Length: 124
Image (cartoon, rainbow, N blue to C red):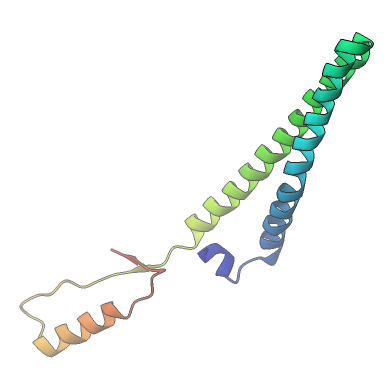
């Protein structure tokens, strides 16, 4: 979620949104199309020519192969973008440990500052 809120390149966010919309539309369409092709292949095997049934089965295999290829390529692309973002957008806060040399009022200020830190930050 931090990546989506980050004011980084808008092109990457539009691409992610577009791929999510395509995934939500293409998944049911591919499922229904595959089911209809297989159902037609079964009907052709029982009632008419085997050549049309083989053609429908080949069409189903091609449809699902293209769908899986697109899904994997898209997923891999977005994972690569996310990993690159994680590598280049790290936010680290160095907490100074309490010591005997620091007066108590400064320790209190350090403790209050550490309580106010943002949830995006990493404690080291």
